[in-house]
Image 1: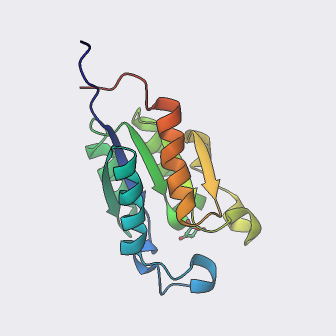
Image 2 (image 1 turned 30 degrees about the vertical axis):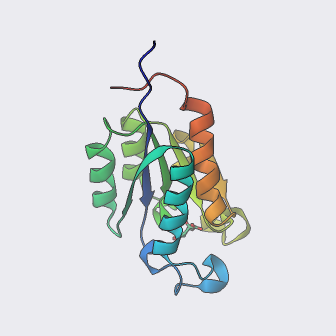
Length: 156
Ligand code: DQA
């Protein structure tokens, strides 16, 4: 009998200001708190047999440190970099530098807002960008990773 595959390991990263979800610009981001969003993510991960770790920070360097420290653990990354999306070359380099496939997600539709939000410096180093679907952006990001790399061999 072939050995059973271990669970897919997912790292979810939330960037600056996402800790204020629920009270921050609810007309743009909705009323769901970060705890509520994480509960939805974990519920979905449970139903898809995914082992998830979730991390939020308002500090660019901490996000980069987390990506580095979990680079050998994670099979895939779903990242909402917040405003760092639009200007952080160091976050972009961190994603490019670890060989873990990443999906960029946004709650709001960054393409229908201010001009500066239309630019994503992380997009070229991510496998996909999903924006404007609220929690569903994260869910689709997870499903995309599972569909594209979920069945490939995993590091032990
Ligand atoms: C965001 C969009 C960014 O432009 C913004 O700076 C955020 C949240 C989103 O999820 O819609 O902080 O990433």
